[in-house]
Amino acid sequence: MRDSTRHALERAAELARNNRLVEAMATAEPVITTADEFESAEIRQWLIDHADDFTGEV
Image (cartoon, rainbow, N blue to C red; front, side, top):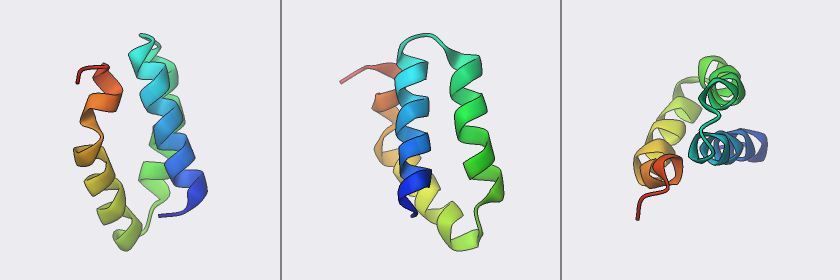
C-alpha cells in the first residue's frame, strides 16, 4: 500500500476516535475508491487489522 494511503487511513482512524466521523470518511473515501484491486485488498486487510484504531477500544 502506498504511504499516502496508509497515512490517510491512520488520519481517518484518529478523526473517528475523536468523534469527527464526517471528516474521517472524507479523508478515507478518496483513497479507498481510487485504489486498484491489489491496493484494495491491502486496504481491506489493514482495516481488519486496525479496526480498534477507529473505536479506541483495546
